[in-house]
Image (cartoon, rainbow, N blue to C red; front, side):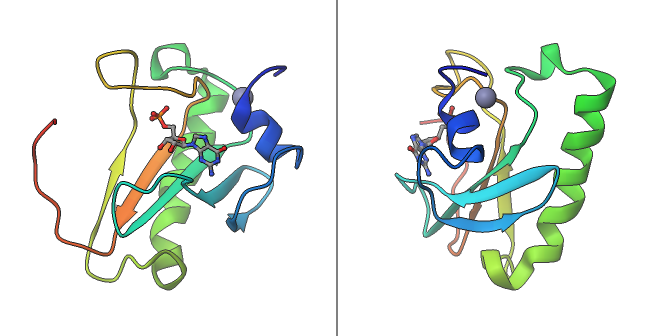
Length: 113
Ligand code: 5GP
Ligand code: ZN
């Protein structure tokens, strides 16, 4: 997808710190971490919202969800972690290519600040 930051990162046109990559997804460090560890799991096929997700996209997302816990050491998930998928304006979504935030490495509160 032209003009999509994450498609450009997937294509290698914009550099990112890669933690994992396969045919389905890329996992990179977030450039502006909101927790001690903050990664982004990005399915390689571009779509914007869960509401726009095709059956094939859903398979891709489920592969992402199954892969993440297998990377316990690499992503620092040993003591627990949080996954976040921001959807739309109220959630503060800024990149319109669906991605899963992976937050770990610290105790986390529960306030939608
Ligand atoms: P959203 O707000 O859409 O849920 O999440 C977008 C995330 O992408 C933000 O946490 C932001 O810090 C991160 N981000 C924005 N630009 C870049 C970039 O160029 N590289 C990386 N690695 N992360 C980025
Ligand atoms: Zn994209």
